[in-house]
Length: 268
Image (cartoon, rainbow, N blue to C red; front, side):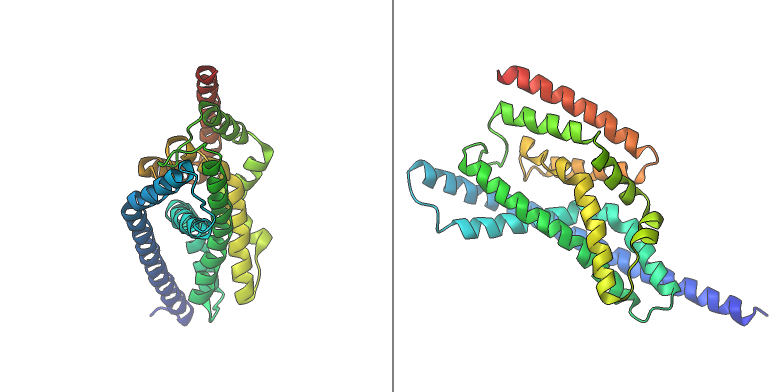
């Protein structure tokens, strides 16, 4: 007959597996909704920005539309970040869930949800900055209605900056935190509901530090170019989860610098 301790351990493992299944299904549902939104709203967003550009060319004031445009772009960026970044954060989310359950925390699922909320809060702040930056670029006539860079020099600058950033110590430090979930938890564990939000927010900040430059590549081919959105999401996933992710990112950085140099030469 199995001992009480073995039976309790077996029950705990079954509970953890059930929790993980629930979380995985929830994350998949969120990702599906995010990508559905991006697919269905891309054309409408381009139409809205095209009309704003036409009004500007006709000398019509657009101050009244500025808040609406900022909100629309913020929502677009925020949903896009959810679709792009949650897959790479899933291993840590599942690890957090297991840690809470093994500690017999009575708020296991709530703490896990709060951790995800804190993580997404960091990316929401980035999304607000990205939306404001996009408006500034459009008003400077540097973006097309497709939300892509019009200037060859701007394209070259983005590519070179992103390529160089792939080699900087701050990138490597942030990537190290994202690639080592156990190390992150040992350094940043916080108790309680507020602690869960704080841990998620800190992890989100490290992810923003790791990936913000990559997101600016969307201005090269168009912010709503879903092939680029998917490609960057896969790149982030490989860079964070593959054993050779650091080398992979640095090689990509060299290629981006070469591409940017080529674009700069043709823009002159």
